[in-house]
Image (cartoon, rainbow, N blue to C red; front, side, top):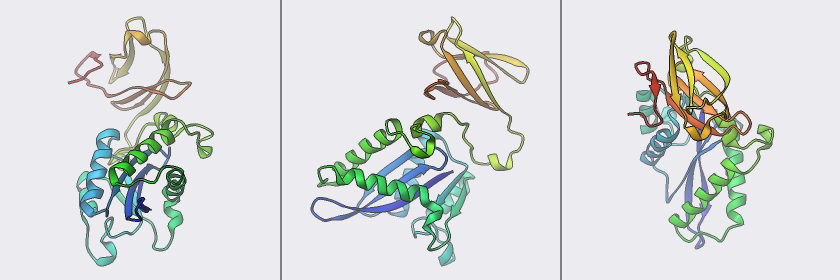
Length: 247
């Protein structure tokens, strides 16, 4: 599940602008942070799609009841609701006047603003966007998170198979976690539907311990110590060898 929300910030000249943030509910991975003069319904959908291009679609999305997120309380639908319905992503709303439901992203807003307050005030949206990008990289890869037992959000994100649209209704998905080592050819072997498949990882990794997180044909290969993501793929059952670059 992802959470998304809008917060306000002042540029150096006092102009009020809006920041659209998106976070992964489990790992707290800072998925997206985009600055706009005013966030419009189309901006919300565009940022959602760009984020999904990098991370895949989530099983669900949680927001508050802002007008760009939902038209439910006005007896209709907004663009985001229609698009999530089309994609099969479950849409969830917090109760009115109950910000605790979206508490993780509300806390992220606070942490982000403390960071921005220590920077040279941005004079333009592009300058502010550069600061947002720098913070997201630091937050995801460097800053230990107390709620994650000192791991970074990227480490926590890389150690779990992700739910996708429709997963909650699909009880037949088969999950496996396996420890292994990269062989001398730079590959690791997995069995799918009683057939062995060889996954290319690269000779530079030969002998390296790895962890495989397998959900049917979706496979994530990580370092068991650091949780670094080494490779992610959807296995092609028609090929014995899964090359590093798949067509």
